[in-house]
Length: 284
Image 1 (cartoon, helix red, strand yellow):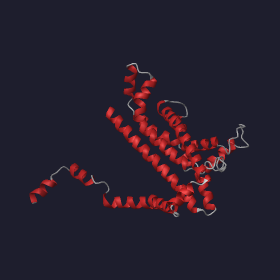
Image 2 (tube, one colour; image 1 turned 90 degrees about the vertical axis):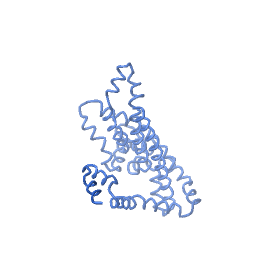
Image 3 (cartoon, helix red, strand yellow; image 1 turned 90 degrees about the horizontal axis):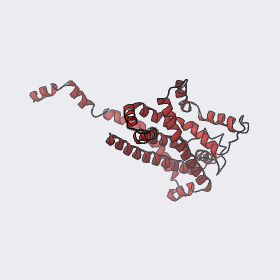
Image 4 (cartoon, one colour; image 1 turned 180 degrees about the vertical axis):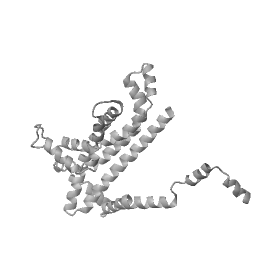
């Protein structure tokens, strides 16, 4: 017994340290993380879910099948899809320019990308209303239209794809691109066959975050969108109105529907992103 203890003590310090840390933070850290996650995320979600089904499953479907609720969900999802698709293209392009090009004011532009994270979204709606409302200095009146919703949501979701793609672009090996060019590959072919597969997981992650942020947005659309029922009223505005008239179950039902949509999109994109990552690693 004593000899085995001595032999164990003679193991390299690095091996003993790795064995001690292999289990992560330990039971205490795991308990704290689980408790915090439960308080901040799981309990509120459980409360919304329970309230959404106060009238049973049929009551839930009746609540989200009301004409105004159905229209708000369709407007929200439709506009958010447009915003996500625009972000795929322009967000990737902006990330590319910020990483690969040099121009005056680059640091200022790079900092400007994060402004939607810091700016209260109601301020964005007010600014957009002054630019594209009845008093527009450009004589462009978009308030209370769906294009206005798209513009407002593009503003608040701008950073997601850009910040997801930037780190991947910084880590890309330029020698592979140079080798492809030396072999006669065009810029489009190099991007499609070499760069895009490496960027795809990050693009999907940023797109999913942009979409889920858009479907739950309120502040940036409340003024410029107008909240016209069945036209520009988004789900968050519909939920607020239902709460104001004391129809909490209807509000909870639409909230739960948004949660299901958001989780489904993020889960699906996570699966696609993981598969794309594995294919990229296998190709190397």
